[in-house]
Image (cartoon, rainbow, N blue to C red; front, side):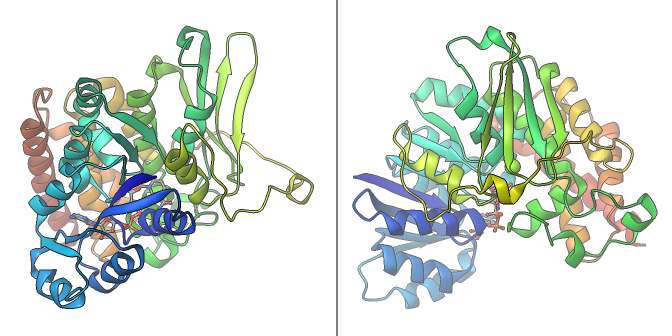
Length: 385
Ligand code: NAD
Ligand code: MG
């Protein structure tokens, strides 16, 4: 029996995680569930799973949560610190499924408990990767990647012989605008951008997939997670999203992990690791699939890829700036305030105009993140006016 805490339990990944946990009541017991402010969904999940604690990050939603769970015996709390406190309770397995750098502090709190931390929430690894992985080493925590690409690499990577790995090849679907012209992309609406062809995901990551910033963030995430020279991490567009990524060895063998494009597969791998657990997914029907296609990503239409590669190469504060500026630009795009192509343009500007020293502490990361957000916010206002 493993205790499980889910940070970001009401989102796309959180819901998939709950689905698996609820199908295996003999394996998992829920400790804490957190959300930003979706009280209805959070309270219902807490009641169904007999959670010990339910937390809303937005303190204004606490009275509603309190009412929704009155008489159930489930403890409630509110505020960003309460989310960290829930993570710090410790669980055998903590799922980090908050969106954005907002998940950094609670991810660190979970890591400091030394259990298994499943990371779907990739932004903390981008902004503070070295600090996150160093904390995991220091506290004996195990980080398992739930991001489908990284989970695929994790399953194929020979950690005992990393020098025998020639390349990591991350696959990318190419998103909804894979074959659109730049002119057409300039007119894209938020509704079009969040309609991903293969995956059902939260709004932010869906926009990231459409700009391919998601693959850029994943490039940095892979460099943090796997012992390999970042120059040997490549990206290939694979529109069917059946191969989730590959590891290429010096002898010419390339290992791939295949599966349906449903996050429950990589999440189940992490929840049960090193064991395996059943999921409701059907076996892949290769004959029905018929073919798998591959193409190179277009660096002109997907400028975000080059920005992320440059931030990874520059190191220091650059990845945190890239991430923060992107979060602000994506939110502005989703709010209908800026155009689709302006997202990467804003990230590019902020990266070029702001070059603080490499952060050595979490507080330094938060300061860089805040300043990059402030600058990106100003740049958004320039676009709007
Ligand atoms: P989502 O928007 O569907 O859910 C986000 C969750 O975080 C919700 O529970 C929300 O209440 C909570 N949250 C939002 N802001 C918060 C804040 N300030 N403080 C505390 N909690 C907050 O997002 P998602 O699609 O589930 O993605 C979650 C993370 O997983 C992201 O980092 C994303 O990049 C990554 N990821 C998602 C998928 C996917 O298929 N959805 C795949 C791979 C990786
Ligand atoms: Mg992914």
